[in-house]
Image (tube, rainbow, N blue to C red; front, side, top):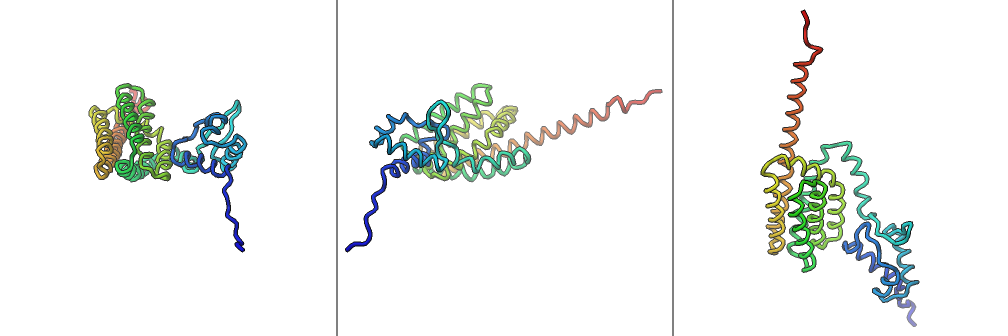
Length: 261
């Protein structure tokens, strides 16, 4: 007689796993609201009680939460554990920005390479859309809009790599660097040729992924971050020189240093 019985998975476990997979792959993002219970149950082909049980399982993991006023939303748990401590550290230690750019170079170079190898037609469509939006944003003087468009493009590339960890790590890093990306764009804007070069660099990343050239995509992404790092460093050095010169000028001509006869 067989001693071990075949374990049949519960429907709610299968539904929870399906929804969790959507969160991991980025189909459901932090802040997204799950479809209404009736619609989602029909889509998944399960009963509403089974769906409720599945959602409760995800809620117990902190993956979703119900909000006042109705609706169940995806949380940012997969990213917040990385984001929260580093956000405070970035504010207290500005030099970490260079380390973040260095890490971003490694991460985005790999993401671009894999995107060129693995992107589906749907991924390519999203990359095309975010690239178009980025070009449109660069025409305006709205730095916040440009920053969001920049992040959306790089995030689309990260998710097209089809590596769940890389996709979420890219999202966390870009979220962490949102204010710094905005600052970078503001400082780079003071340099006449920077805008054209940035557009060309994003175009090179886009073209290499579109042409399915992994090494070219990696090189384009790394070249982009190298340019940002070096140009930003030059801009910060120039700003420091101007501040030093201004302090010297104020000291030399300070009224308190003048002599009366």
